[in-house]
Length: 427
Ligand code: IMP
Image (cartoon, rainbow, N blue to C red):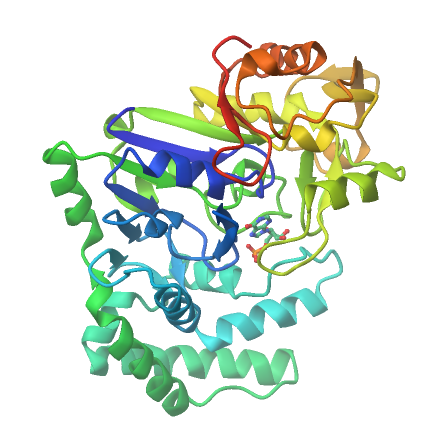
C-alpha cells in the first residue's frame, strides 16, 4: 500500500465507499475526509451492526486510527456533535482520535435555509440534500465564510457573523419574503457547540505533514462521486466541492507529489440521487427490481436512488480524471438474477459516436447510449470468497469492464459485510 492513497467514487456517489474505506483502514494510521459535509452517508456493516456516518471518516470504527476532517470539508457542528454522541453511545472511543481542521468552513443556519429556499425557487431543481452545502461553499469562495478556528476568538466570530446575518436577512426578507435570523441567537447556539468541539479542532495540515514525515500512511476518502464534482460533474446537477482525486490535495493539504495511489470505487451498475442527466437509467420495471435488491435508498435522506446499466464511458472518463490506478467493483451480486446485462460503451449524439462527455448543454440528456449485451450468470454470488469461484459469465463481465475502463480491478464486493469481498487479480 502506498503511503498516501486517495479513494474516490467513480460514478455519482453511493458506490459503496464506506465498506471499502473500512477494509483499507486496517493498513493505515490516518483517514482523512477532504470535501463535502453531512450531505454524504457512508454505510459500514460490522458483525451485523450497521453504522451510517455522515461527517466522521468511517476509520473511527477501527481502534487507534486517527480520523481527520480536513480543511476542504464543510462542518455542520450540530450534526458533528450528534455523530460523536452516536459513536460514543456505541462504545466507540472518539476523543483523541478525531481531528477537525481549524480551516474547515462552518455550515450556519442561514446556509440550510438558503439551500431549501433555492430548491423551492429554482425551475430546474438540483435535488440537493438541503444540508446547506452549496451556500456554505459559496460563502467560502466569496470570502465571507466562518471557519472552525474563528470560534477561538469570540469577538472575531461575532463580527463576521453579524455581517453575514445582515446580508442574508436582507436576502431572506426582500427576495424570498421570509423572516431572517438573530445574530445573538446564532452566536449563543454556536458558542455552545464550540465548547463541545474545541478539543478536536487543530491545524490538521501540520498534523498530516508530521505523520507523513514519520512514514505513517494516510487514506484520503472522497465523499459523493466524480460526476457530482463541481468542475468535472454533470453541472449544474452537482455538489459544490471537488470529490475527484485532485480535491484531496486541496481539501487535506497534501501536495500532489505525496499521493502514491488513487483507487476508484465503482458499482457494477449505475445509480444517482437527485436530479440531472443519466443516460443509462432504467426505463422498465428493472428500476424497481434493482433498487429493491440493491437497497438503493439514500443513506442521508432516504430518497430512492435512480438505477441504470453500467456506463463504461462514464467510468473510463472517471479513471482518466482521477488518475485511478485500480478499482473496486461493488454490488456485483445485485445483478445475479439478470439474464441479460447491458454495458454502455459509447454515446450517440446527432449521428456521431462519443467516448467522452463534452460540456455541451443537453448532451447527456439527449445522447443515446450504445449498449453491448452480456449473458448473465444467474447464480447467487453473495457467498463467493474467491475470484476462481465466480461463474464464467461473471468473470467475463468483469473482464469486459476492465478492458473498457482501462483500469485493473483490485477487489470485488458481493454484499454488505467485510467478508463478502474477494481479490480480483485475474480479471
Ligand atoms: P448537495 O451536495 O446537498 O448540494 O446536493 C447536490 C447534488 O449532489 C444532489 O443531486 C444530491 O442528491 C447529490 N449528493 C450529495 N451528496 C450525495 C451523496 O453522498 N451521494 C449521492 N448523491 C449526493
